[in-house]
Length: 241
Image (cartoon, rainbow, N blue to C red):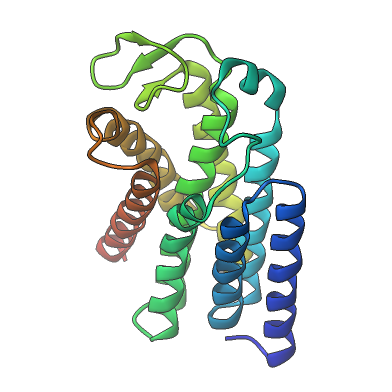
């Protein structure tokens, strides 16, 4: 936990950014409340660095959502009616980093292990969002389980554009996330990067196997793949140290 004035700044910023996101129709009312809760929780119980990282990639997700939004709307592949996120969207991607923060606050995770876990959750969520919003413009989409051609926007669909974008996004997020949290840069950032790539693959597999059959919601998919990526990332770190 940071100094009281930094905690206050984090809470105020969470409130302001959530309110502005609601005004811009990036979030529903429920989404704005959930966004504030996630941001305030991270700001109160973790570091200002973690709060900053979460905020930056939340904004990046909104920007990716609004990119070519008119075309997405014409094709019926936009999020919500106007690109807005609900509380389910927010908690789907916000709960995993909050779990990492809770584990750090209770002393279960040391700083480096926390950096691995937190950055992995952000990398999986951020790379998936950016890949989904930008990669959906690629018309050549294949179902990840059998590589048959499917329509853009289908759960489990992958494309060359989406794969490239998600991989690049995972690398950039992992590098920036690791630097922000640890204020250093070493080879360990490769673990969150690898988890970002793995998480995106799992998201597509779960989408094809479970979502398309009504056995899992996209929110549960987002949450579970981020948690799985974070847990595997921590396991890899503990094996190599």
